[in-house]
Amino acid sequence: GAVVSQHPSWVICKSGTSVKIECRSLDFQATTMFWYRQFPKQSLMLMATSNEGSKATYEQGVEKDKFLINHASLTLSTLTVTSAHPEDSSFYICSARDRTGTESYNEQFFGPGTRLTVL
Amino acid sequence: AQSVSQHNHHVILSEAASLELGCNYSYGGTVNLFWYVQYPGQHLQLLLKYFSGDPLVKGIKGFEAEFIKSKFSFNLRKPSVQWSDTAEYFCAVNNNAGNMLTFGGGTRLMVKP
Image (cartoon, rainbow over all chains, first blue to last red; front, side):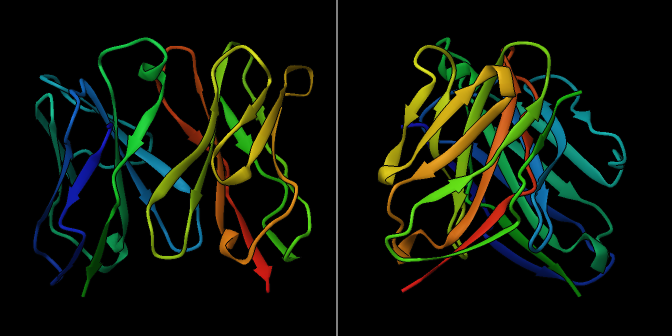
């Protein structure tokens, strides 16, 4: 149980284009999903917290208009990198928190990540 | 704000050596603690977690960690490492509300055969 998927797993795009990344909780409902970015040989940095049915909460320094987050259902959150540039190339990872249960509520289940390369 | 520090950035060990990776956090309230592993080219996997109860937590693949509240530490241990343990290890902390998960900088472990 507690499986999170991401699509696509790898994307290469031209500078200036927009890229959408999907994060799905496959066997549980997630009122909250999180988006992280991981640069090579670095740790995960939280970009934003995505809440179902409401606006995402962005961390300091993350541009809201550049990284659009939509959490339209209890099993799907999307991250759209708008007008992507080479410096946006990174590994984007989502996680989801199970809305039910007590102890499991404090645990985040991670997706496999999406590697974005902007040429 | 909470923060997590992992003291060892790179660790090189021979097979069968014992492993201890340090993790310290700063947060005054009740915390939940996690260790994740990321094998080369793969996604994060949960090794073990601590929410409450016995401070000595056993995880998968022979790993364990001990929560020492007075030291704000949650060090990861394994008595005898294998070549297949070569990976990057991340310590992470969130508060009891289950909100923001803060990661340490990671420790890259290389086990020589």
